[in-house]
Length: 222
Image 1 (cartoon, helix red, strand yellow):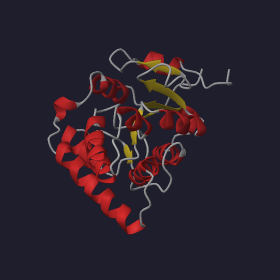
Image 2 (image 1 turned 60 degrees about the vertical axis):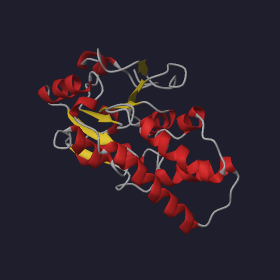
Image 3 (image 1 turned 90 degrees about the vertical axis):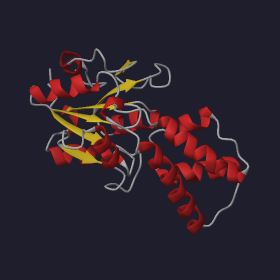
Image 4 (image 1 turned 135 degrees about the vertical axis):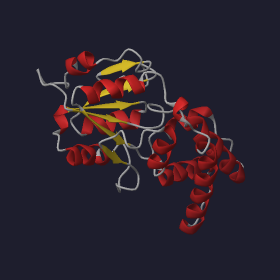
């Protein structure tokens, strides 16, 4: 059985729950287009880049905008989001994450961040985790957002680890698709139906062990 050499963490919904921050910010801006953003809409924006999210909302609101207008709105959204993120502390790290990270590092397993967020380093710094990760790949490092596998493949490359020796922790369908496209093992954290394409789905990482990670098999591989 192949033993894993690296674990790639998504950020929002995996390490810290900032989904509500995104929702509040996007909802405020969508209201300017007379569109009421719903929690269901927000679920469809998980793991999606800022500009792709904005384009989706514009389509739902049935509005036509110029590129410079979208850039201005995206900038304002980020300012709202960062105001909330500025309140983050190490106490906001989700249960089980710190223990898992410590276990992985104690056993020589590389850890990387693979996030669409351009604010990932800022958020990790507020959580006291920036220096813990061996590699950080975020929205500033890639040109294609999930479900494209670029962010995960780049993380593996920077760690010097083959994709088949990586496990991804994700909470969004787009992230699950990206991990599978990268030929990596993937654990979904959240709703079992929504994340059913993952190799394993858990509610959280509280009881996730290195033994479990090593027992996951890539679909179609003995």
